[in-house]
Image 1: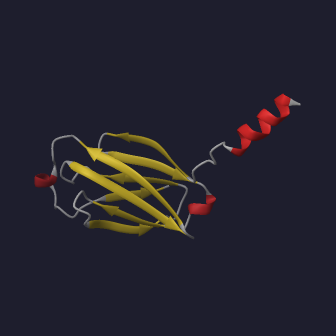
Image 2 (image 1 turned 135 degrees about the vertical axis):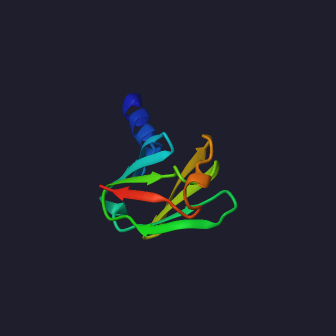
Length: 111
C-alpha cells in the first residue's frame, strides 16, 4: 500500500515532456525537433539586445537555425503556438563571421 501511494505521488510530480527538443547546438547551428502540437508555431529569433532578427512559421517537425553569418553573442529562439511559449537559448562563442556575409542573414532549414 505504501509503495502504491509513493508511486502515485511520484507520478503527480513528474514533469510533462516538452514539445520542443534540442538535438544539437554545435558549429553555429541549432538543430531541434518539435512534436505535432508545435507544427505551425511562430518562430522568432532575437539577438542579445532583444532585436528580432528572423521570423517564420514552423512547417515541419525538424528545424535547423544557422547562425554562421551572425556575430558572436547570445540569441533566443521563441516558438509560440496556442498559448505555449518554448524558448531555446544559444550562445555563439565562435569568431564572428558577420564581416563575411550580410549582417541580416540567417539560414533556416525545415525538414
